[in-house]
Length: 130
Image 1 (cartoon, rainbow, N blue to C red):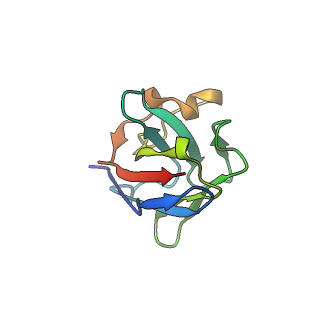
Image 2 (image 1 turned 180 degrees about the vertical axis):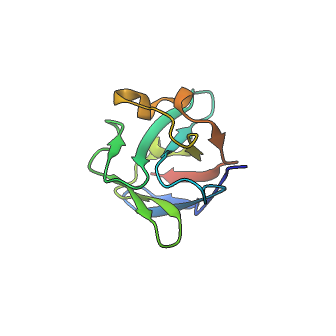
Image 3 (image 1 turned 90 degrees about the horizontal axis):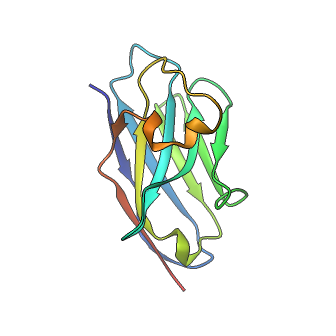
């Protein structure tokens, strides 16, 4: 059973930085699969932040975070990180790590779609104050 587990959420001032971590257990048999970061603010729908195809250099970002956030994979420890710089109050929300099934075909903009992911973590809260 695949289970993403997030950590690293915190309260920061606008302009600050934060790094979120995600460990996805259950992929010992699989080397290529999509993992993504999503966020959800109160009263709003869950939206994509960034995605990475594990085992490759393929990454995708939402327009709202391009140039500020980076999704980083560390294969040695099987972790995926979300490095967030130049944080803004509108980045506030619950951040979720998600994983797609092994070998699932996800093409084009679908890497940033909630529907492409099958396993979800419990979330970690990020609060950015002005």
